[in-house]
Image (cartoon, rainbow, N blue to C red; front, side, top):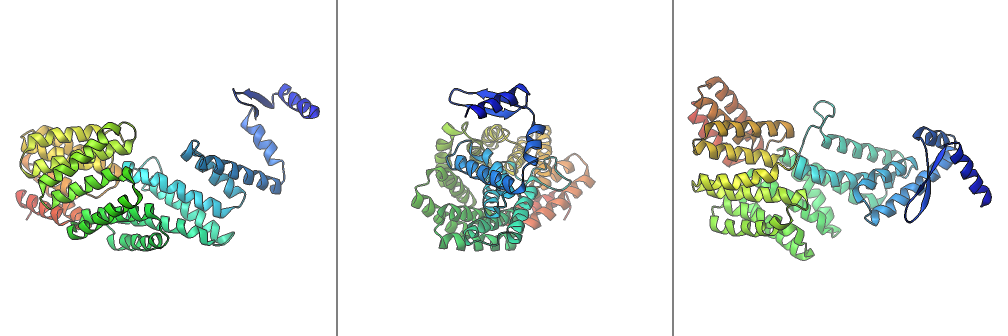
Length: 408
């Protein structure tokens, strides 16, 4: 022990390591990253593997104790890869990817964030997962325990395909994942699969199917007593009632969602964004009955909440509704401002949901300003997006505006 202390003192005197004291322990660190790399690179590959293995297990233990949870995952992945534990690497790569893509899907959508041209953060996450899966096949082989992660990847792929209008492919992924999770009793992932089917049904106005899926969602929430999802059920049930023109019932469900979310909206971005969506749906009720002044109040509340995050598909929908409401209130300059923000948000997210409606309204405003060529250009885009998403309500709206701008 004395010898070890003398070695430590000598390394400190030579400024190779430094002593760091906290209230609970004393530890040492290299004074420079290059020194750490030099020492580590000088040891054998076998010993490196042992060190990486110990570190991967250390960080896994910290993750399981929920200490600085998400930020620990890259360390587990890195050390598992370098200890050649490819099963562990794949497991945590999928967990890490799913957590961030859950946030991405809800908050950031397909935002292009300084990556290669035409490559999104979502592309990068999926490429990392596929690369890890390939290493697993080439290395240790396939373990039955990884099937759960294979099916989580299938769910992620299905979610993206549905969002982008590739419904046959997306539903196939979701159905296959759903069968696996049902067989294995994974209620959390079953709920996620059900939600994706509901989003597909919203996009395609498949209201009979949506009613069935909402019943299943309600059952799954009650089965697990998952109160953190109840506000999503209320909001989606409210939207279903709007689409079936049961406006009084819709208001009751949306009021429940608002009551639940308002006190906690500042705690987490997902709560404020869900509250924004709820206000947007309330505005759609008022728009449907011609109360544009009331709708404007609801939409301004939605906008303030949604603008806390980076541009999202939801924010683009809110901007579009604001533009339409301002048009009906004869606030044409404000209407132009909001539709410009909407198309900018769509460009940034690469999202298509609702874009046909936005392009059609922009065509209407261009026609009103006597820019007929621009109006026809935007109505052409509106037809393309509406056709891609296969939403009958959006297609009817585009047809209506096309007649207004003398395109048909």
